[in-house]
Length: 288
Image 1 (tube, rainbow, N blue to C red):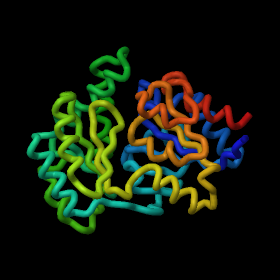
Image 2 (cartoon, rainbow, N blue to C red; image 1 turned 90 degrees about the horizontal axis):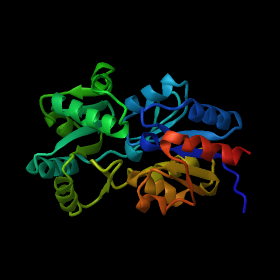
Image 3 (cartoon, one colour; image 1 turned 180 degrees about the vertical axis):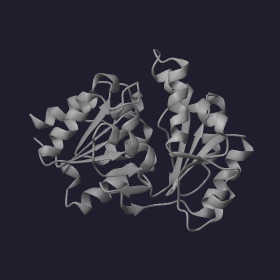
């Protein structure tokens, strides 16, 4: 049966972005073509609003954004349409576990992303950047890492006390980074004992923790309902574990060829890799 697609939800890292962490011209043109055809395009990312918006604006892409794995939905103009923050009590419980493992983590809030360790923040992003793009040089990776701070996408604080206790600052997500697989596995195992949290990942070097109601699939459901679109009329494109919830509910689920096998099995079809314009190919297929 041929599906009429009225909404396309697209993940960013490993999906829309290539290995240079930018949106290719082909992907940009395909998105603009879909919008011109009257299709609602929404970005569904684990990134904060600022980090997502910055990359999209560079390519002239204007659209609503599902941020922090569904913890926040923003309109094209940047207004918050819906939010599903973690409770402060739950956040404090999570902090206790992560601190006991001496884990490096960042906090995503309505006001942006926060870290307590500038050097580790740089190291993590550099390692991710260079592992994704083997042609990348050290200086280019360092520049990309520092840009998060220079552009105000990440803020350095002495501690997380205010963020963990101030009820006026919604706390959306924890992201834990480690290049020690055993350490991540231990943390993941312990986190499974915590109730009412969604534990996912957007790469083999991280764990992402949200409130149970902050998931891309639930956010896509909310977005579609708000725009009078049936889920059967949605297409979702993603590559990693934090995309599974939206791949499961979309009328047309498209998994990236570069994704893990566990994720790909949730796709109705597999498109090309993120570095070979898989998003553009998936979009153009439904426009023809």
